[in-house]
Image (cartoon, rainbow, N blue to C red; front, side, top):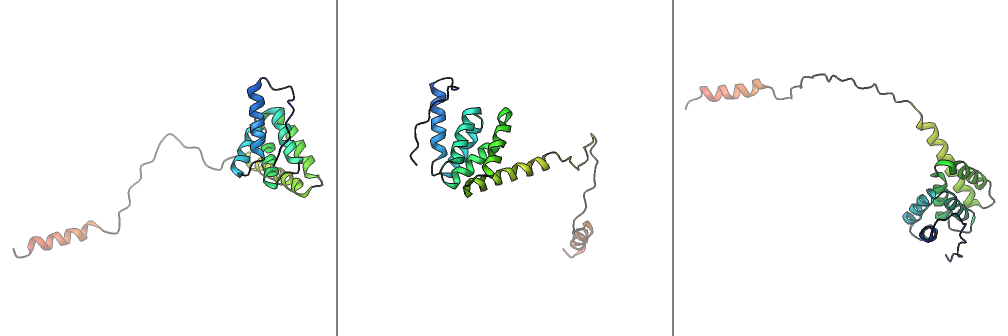
Length: 158
């Protein structure tokens, strides 16, 4: 997919960060699914610039895998951008394009499931400092059977 050149937002600090954002943006539209997903995760750490790129990918005419990865990146946003990412996902779930709406709805479902399961208290009892000593159970072969064989050999003719 041929991408138009991205205009720097002015938030980038130096030329290296501009190049990094361009590289991650190109990888977001590549053909390798693991590269797409990895670049979406890396963009989730890039604050406003990452949010802009992920939002652009989600609402563009990109392939389904790119939209799913963009939704994944928005889902993985942390810190002060988390609320903005959730707003983008909820707006995307009401989008007219079916692939965009499905990707956003799935991301919101995953977020909802992780919230409910993350705060459950553990049912296991805490370990105490003492460790109990247990007896080791004997196997099927008992010593008596071995002793009988030895006695038989002892009294046999030599």
